[in-house]
Amino acid sequence: MQRVKILTVVLSRNRWKDPFGVHSTVTDWTRRRSVHTSCATFEFHEFDKRSGYDTGFEIADTRIERIRLGLKQLKKEIKLWKKEVKEVLICDPIFDYRPGEVDVYWRFYEESSLDHWIVTSDSDHAEGFSKCELKISNQGYGLFHGNLCSRVPKDGRIQNSGYCNIITKRVSKSFQRDSFLDWSPYTHLNLRLRGDGRSYLINIHVSGQFDIMWNDVFTFVLYTRGGPYWQTTRIPFSKFFFASKGRIQDKQAPLPLYRITNFGITVSDKADGPFQLELDYIGADFDPTHHEETAYEMYEVKQNFIVGT
Image 1 (cartoon, helix red, strand yellow):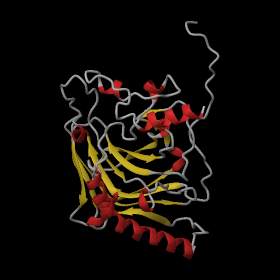
Image 2 (image 1 turned 90 degrees about the vertical axis):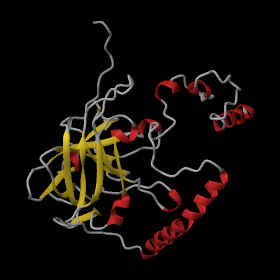
Image 3 (image 1 turned 180 degrees about the vertical axis):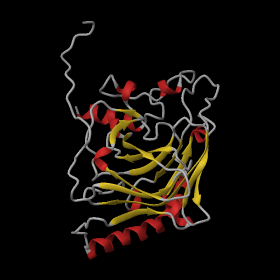
């Protein structure tokens, strides 16, 4: 039994190195196969959290380049680790969340505030022709703008296009350790923005540990008003509905506010043309009169039916 375990570990570590010496004419997918205990692996399992999309991070090809990148990042990570240690020693948690006070998590006031965000569109992945950008406007606010195009490339492979998206970088601790945002004391999402009359999607990602949970996201529609006036939008977290890979799930669940990994805004309303959304801040607040856990029915789907009847 111990030898079987050792063989499984060796094969799993070398699954990208063609351990069985498959002929070069075989497809890449066949060469990447490895030993698994489940026959459903090739249908549902995902090896990549980004599903094949570019992460945008600098990746080294050789060991020497990886060492150079690591040493370059080491100084920054040590500073972040010292800051974490000081926070633990100070031990000054918030005990009282007062109604009406907004705790701001992202504010757009200088160029460095844009470092927390990743901007993507379908054209970045050769899936369309949309363009977008996130910058600081002339008035000193965050400006998410671009041109939306739903035209599909004629390559016989792409079926859907027409989206632009901004998303925060994964919440992490020092030395690239994954972490979470804890919004459990809050009841509402609070944004101050100035829109163009379009509808946007607000996405709160709650990526889990296993691959089937990597694309879990809670979404709600943001309706904006056109014109020169600012609007303050408060959305209860209970209104966010559960989806995965852009598909609303039959079984709904409350938003787990204690394990938020990313926050994003998407425009994909199939209305081709320019768009712009100006943002002042994104935060959360507490309302003691709000007791709703989720606004959607959570029911069990019975599986005792017979196909064809």
